[in-house]
Image (cartoon, rainbow, N blue to C red; front, side, top):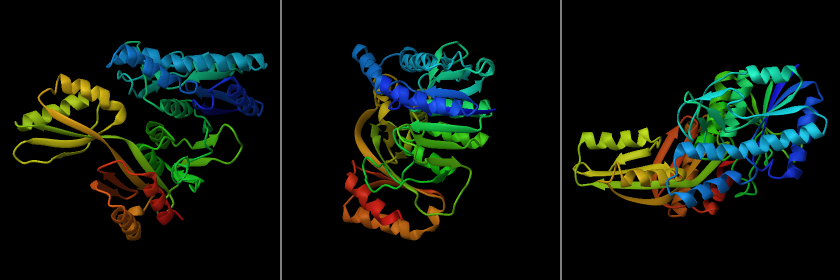
Length: 393
């Protein structure tokens, strides 16, 4: 009997009607003599609502307590889905992250999975139960609840697939695969049949809200094929595996959730620079594109995620109060595809579009499978459309 792991995102489980659709897909695979482990997210916009409510109480809520709060969203979903499946005549049991044996690092809100003790899950599978696991959460050595960051349920699913030696890992959402760009922004976006792990990792790391980048790393490490499909139709999805095709551009990602930070101080020394970097790393803020713009004073610029802005503001008021900081939103556009660096025509087309639109470039990063350009301001979706039309075939 094969074990299959299914993950359903927040839009797939948003209400009771959609939970019934999810149940139908689970039952269909269970009736084909499979062991079924299901990972679910919080319903709809539950996590956003909980974050908003917490920030009404504190501008900088304690991260441990935020993990306790945010983990409740997934617990609601697992219980509802289990109640439904049991009513339909299929034995199911819900497990939180700690009940499922998901042991993590000590970090709050950005924890990573270190080990999974599958004893409880295997016991329930042996009793022919459908196991419903809360995604996005685990527990650490202090027995505290930890969470994995937005999209972390994907990582839960792929890690469980690896630990259980599952035959397949399906990631269900409201889209039927990975597209050449965001289909909500560009109607002509094309669905991709296959992607390599490295290509998908680049797409995720550049901000595409398709798969959690950590889940792709786990899939590659344990060679777990990941299949992205829609909850709401039966169309073929996108398969992510180790296969690499020599191609040009497969996908274009536009990320507007980036804050460009400029920090200045009249005093400058190696010690001050190192202190700034160490403070950021200790607080789990990874600065990207960090540059010192002056040779005689501190004038550094770098990028952080939008979600880290409040944390950075808190740090700048305390540990880094000697800095004079300014912030503004910027855009990054990344073109992803194995072998892209070997095709000069792609870069020439890209630069022509940038010139025609009078866009200001802050940074260009090119490697074997990616061209990523950071712009000084927010770039309009019309530019994304022009690039897509020119380089996607």
